[in-house]
Image 1 (cartoon, one colour):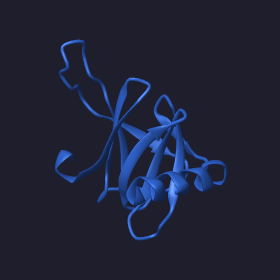
Image 2 (image 1 turned 180 degrees about the vertical axis):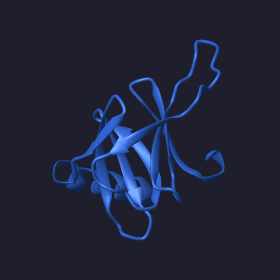
Image 3 (image 1 turned 135 degrees about the horizontal axis):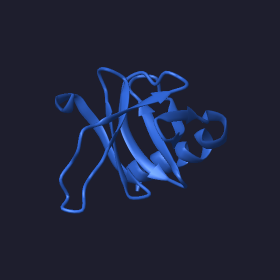
Length: 102
């Protein structure tokens, strides 16, 4: 699993990674000493194909899909995640464009 990680970010102090080949999202528990624990698979209500980068902003994970140009705004609640593309897509698109152009 870790050989295919493409996105990695912290959201509210929690480490998340995505796998570009298996299309999965994981939460990685980290103990007080900084040691990573067993990954927790997060179930997503909508498929994310080829998650190819991830950032955290405004309490959401912003995940870019490889080849499609889609950016998903994902909220995580426990072991479940919900894609909110209509609410975040416009704002997150500007964020990504600004990040690479500036």
